[in-house]
Length: 152
Picture 1 (spheres, one colour):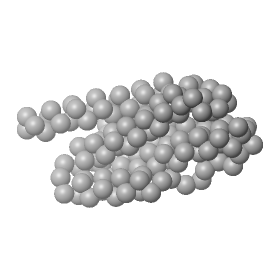
Picture 2 (cartoon, rainbow, N blue to C red):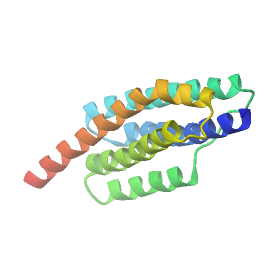
Picture 3 (tube, rainbow, N blue to C red):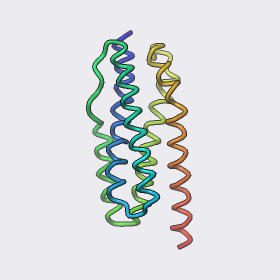
């Protein structure tokens, strides 16, 4: 049971760490002050998410994940390329929103999975509203930027 909890939570840590790293980079690359602030705020949120999940892994006797995922690395690379050859702000927001999709899906799956141990499910359920709110905020931002881009 402890191994399953640690494994479930470590998967979420790796995906959240991908997001944190990507947001930190995006905050340095975009020119728009509001997006810089938004990305920095969400990076801090992701850092806290990693901290909370890591504490939960330790609480069940596991060792917290210390790296991200290959998918996250590829997504970050694609985001850089997309931003370099198009609308930088929209490129980063679109890729970050996909990163949020991935994290939200992983959280939803962990919450729904009958095999998720109670200790892991409790943590996932507690953190899920924050994850969903960040996802929704980025989705809204992406749609707003797309509308501006399409009109302009």
